[in-house]
Image (cartoon, rainbow, N blue to C red; front, side, top):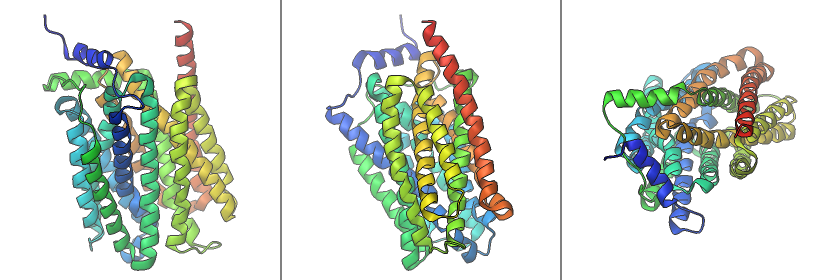
Length: 417
């Protein structure tokens, strides 16, 4: 009697154990996905460091300049709805590798565009092509890594995301100070291409993937499982709120620092993005803690830390802002890193397709980024930093409330056996 695809996927996960620490494949996998995360988020957020320069170069308002980020994140959100289900059928590694190579090439082109509308279109296309990595990476890790080490491996991948977000903004800002914003964006395109090549060479091919049925009906049934579970829905909303607030803070921060009383140059202002290093550390540490004390507690603590950090950024003192930003960034990446692993774990437990669940999670992530990020420039123009902090704080408190509710449900179910 033939088995179903779900049975075969379960057998593949349980029968071979997957990569473990100490295995050559585990080391290659972690390095490859770390570099892939660097490339993806460097390319996605590089223009954030030069938003003030874009307002001058294209004669647009801060609110319009923020669209260069929102266009890419919206394109990525749409792409996730395609890449996730596609990876359940064609495999995990191919979408990731194609995504990185094409997006790196587009990154080179972004710095050469001379028309504002064309720049927004190109960024939307680049966002769409970038979707192949984040839509698939957590599903790939769930299948190819031993279950006891998934959170650890996912933490390093999220750490690569953090480093990519930092390097994209930092390199772009510093190069822009020397040779202009176009050179800064082209430099990040070069970084993206280099990381893509390294990932193609290093990433182990899937050995435990089992293709799902490709019919439209089967795709809809799988999507229904990933869309109907209340715990997954809660996590989708949590990450949408968190990311909406996170990208809003970094969209506006550059405008705050280049104006009075700080009057920093774009390159010097971009140095605050080194706080992403703490995000990388926090995501890896949070992943290990989640294996010991449970995801709900770690997610809730991460959100609380971020809220506290946001409050610390209020005074107009640079060193105080940096301290608050480090706390805010660490809290975000701790919560996001654990929540993303929680989604795939939950999906596997209830029999939902993990690729589809990961796609829904990240679609919410980027919808939150696109919607809140698009408003951030206007909020800054109308109410400056206090108004922006109030908007972000409200979003994060919603996320905290949901995380606490999910934690109560989690504890009750564990107590019930």
